[in-house]
Image 1 (cartoon, rainbow, N blue to C red):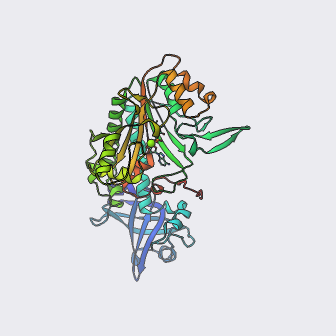
Image 2: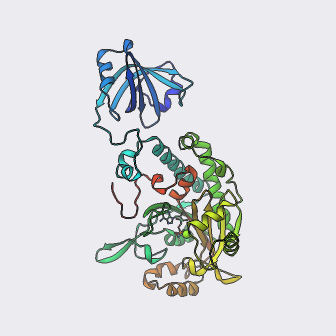
Image 3: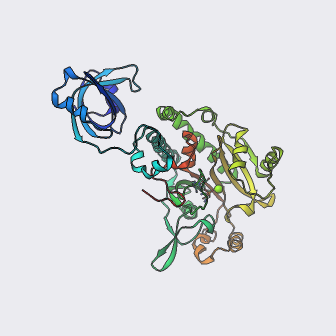
Length: 429
Ligand code: 4AD
Ligand code: MG
């Protein structure tokens, strides 16, 4: 009976057929051990010379790492195995004998591994990280679906900038410039007038000239946008969202977190509400810790790390200076120098995972902000229309999936949280 490794624990005593790849083998004398991977899991096969025909035994001797094979065997309980079972082989057939696999069990440098990303995906830690990503993506869709949000796919080719003009990837669109989307937000706001609660979830692009462990050129962002939601509402939504995703990973990705040796302390602490501070309070805190920051400075990795460290759980920073935030953020009614913007900072040094705000809904104010930011009015006419035909207060945020997954998995660098990372000057494979 054809089976998969994930099903074996329910098939003790049965004879099954598995197809997959050889992770490693140990053989010698009259007994051999094969570690087999089939995409659903990993299992050890035990081969005994006495129970196998010559062809099967010769196949075992010839097998190289990553060869594809088909095995038949009996499932047996084994308390020592991670899956609780092993398989006693009765036949082994080589489907393809792999050439020498470039990634051996020895240590490799990360630049070598990145060149081999298409093969590195097969490694245990990489599989664990990408399974967590898969769970997070599904949890995101479930979260919004259960709350009656409508998915609005925003375009990737766009005529205008959303998050500043310095990080745009430009391309040619039939003789006119077009840009790869930095955020779907501008396209969600009009859709919020059609559906009330909307979100988009897709790839976004930023030509970030910085080579840090927290920046990718291509990353996935999930962005909700809600009509008639005020700033307090969007802060609560962000908190509830992060807490729900963390809970889901803790519930469903235990073996992946184990494989990645993730300490769960800050994950288990990430229940709502999160501590909050205004930007001004954050500046005071940083200054009291001896850091040289002034009101008006943007936070870098060091500042964000310091702010989240004290609490051991995600932190909300609110009320930023208008000058360091995007053109569309609603001014703070109590202080026009500030905007109703919020960043969620993850603990453990991962920094900003969410950026959001209440949006300007007044036509004239938005127009003057677009002018102040030297943005081309023509390209934003349609966006201004939302303030012309029944305007409404609204708010939303964006979360970078890789930043979130890096935090929950404890992976230091974002590059291992996406199947094929795009980094500064690196686009292979
Ligand atoms: O703070 P950002 O720039 O906000 C926006 O783009 C808004 N338009 C979102 C919205 O309100 N709908 O980016 C949002 C998030 C950041 O908090 C971070 O998690 C992630 O996107 N991010 C990046 N992730 C990886 N690599 C980069 N270069 C990133 N830049 C931003
Ligand atoms: Mg931001």
